[in-house]
Image (cartoon, rainbow, N blue to C red; front, top):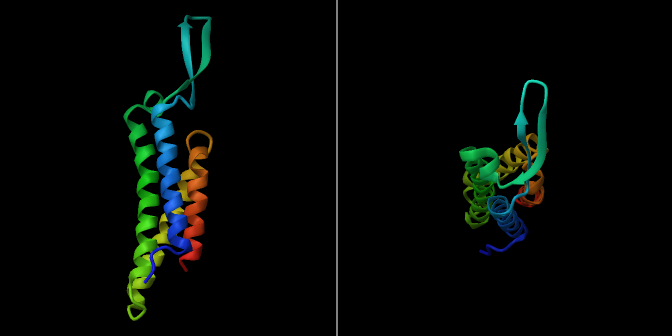
Length: 137
């Protein structure tokens, strides 16, 4: 029984890159936003600023940070569990492999839906999770 196969290494890479992207979004102002200086009846002055995830989204930023961490973590766990189960338990083995496919699909949907703002930071993680699910078949 070896835990370090291609799918486990790729899932671990997806989890590490998701955590790095989340930490970057927490500490560094990478999210573009527009602020207003003055707002009168016929004149509005706006300027573009970069903010951290919590400055831009408030408490909803926590969801954007934790969801990719959970998805990549479940993908890593399912990759480990699919390889550690014995081959006599085919139902359990297929269940763990299906979790890996489901989590990578949800991760890709999350990236596509948020591609214009936050999703671009999680593209490497999503691709690694998808590759992990492919090698976990």
